[in-house]
Amino acid sequence: MAADFGYIEGEFINLYSEENPILEVGDICYALVTNVKDYYYPLIISGIVVQYKITEGQNRIYYIAISSILESPKIINTFVNKQQFEIVPFKDEYVHAKKKILITRESDFKDTLFPVEAFFVRKTESQIKDVRNYYLKIIQKDLKIALLYIDELLTHEL
Image (cartoon, rainbow, N blue to C red; front, side, top):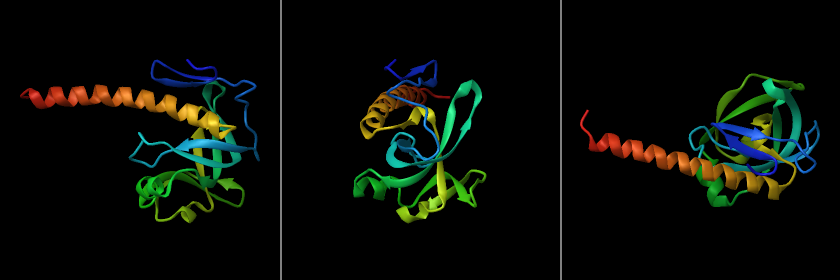
C-alpha cells in the first residue's frame, strides 16, 4: 500500500493525510475519470469541488466541475469525443440524478459534474499521476487474468 492509498481485497483504500487532505467545496483538484466503456484508460482532469457526499465508512464522493482535461488531443479524440460518460447535471445549485451522456466535444461538460470517489481525487497533478499509475497496474493485472480465462474457454469445448 502506498502512503495514502492502496488496494486491499478488491477495494480501493483512500487514507487522508497532510499530503492527501479532505477536500472542501471550492477546492481546486485533479481527478481520474473514465468513459463508460474504457475503464482501463483513466483520464486526468482538473476541476473544482462543487459538492460532496459522505458515504459509508466516511468515504467521500466529490462532485467535480471540469476546468480542463489534461490529455493530448489524440487521447481526447479517442477516449472523450463521441464517448458516453456518467455525469450529474448541475443547475440551480442542486445535484441531480446520475445519467449517461454522449460527448461530442469538451464543451458538452458545461453544467455537469463528475461524481468521483475520493481515492481518485488529489490536490496536485503529480499526486493524481501516481494514483493513475497505481490503478493501471491493478487493471493490467486483472486484464491479464481475464485473458487467461478467455484463452481457457476458447481452448476447451463446452
